[in-house]
Image (cartoon, rainbow, N blue to C red; front, side, top):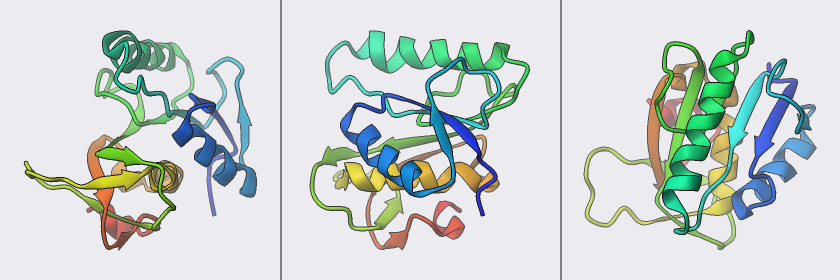
Length: 159
């Protein structure tokens, strides 16, 4: 059972965000867009798609990290860069090349440098973002993911 009751999804209109919204809608979690305070989770599903990399993929993430760290509430933040490690519970999910294919439900966590890391569906990335919300063993860690043969909803996948 999820301990998350209220969350903010930034980038919910993007392609990964749309899949994520569908997962949240099936759960008992309330997704909101109000101020960051008082929420159990903040998910950034924002990506530049290769345009405005510094403005979107770096500055935008740092701004949200800083806003979260100023909040008197600790929130879990996923899909980010490690900026304020001691102030937030966070999990960073870094997908390989994104595709629009049907979800597989299976991923792999990449270890080290791989010449051809493969691809991952946007729907599977959304599922990973949703699944790791309650995996406390993923807090403070970063994961490079691609489609593979492990279930995203199994905490052992991230060990």
